[in-house]
Length: 153
Image 1 (cartoon, rainbow, N blue to C red):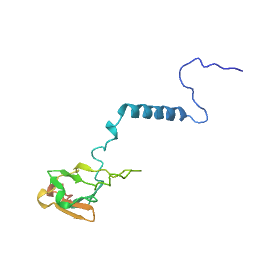
Image 2 (image 1 turned 90 degrees about the horizontal axis):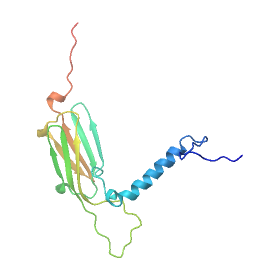
Image 3 (image 1 turned 30 degrees about the vertical axis):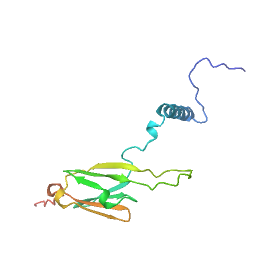
Image 4 (image 1 turned 60 degrees about the vertical axis):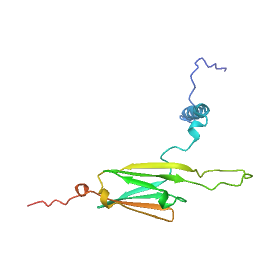
């Protein structure tokens, strides 16, 4: 029996109901990449440095990976509930005869801004850089610390 497709719409593959969605996603990715050219291939702001933000009862602690960045080349500032870290990462140039097979380490200026869940005591902030890891200790403001409430009976 010969079947003709009368509709321009794609048919569903009964073996895999999401196959057509996956094909459409791949097609959209391909079209978007062709349209974007080299504009979107540059590093996206906010990717470097990688950071972990933790919290305990009294402090927030931010740890950032900054390999090859000297402590005196960093600009760290704090406001009520915001931490800003900026600087520049430089990678030594290779010999002009070198051909890259893979280049994943980006260089250039960076800036990260982290908004914390509550205010911090900006007078007591401490920063330390060792072995390519920047650690910033941000004490919570007194009004942001949890208070124990006793229940009367």
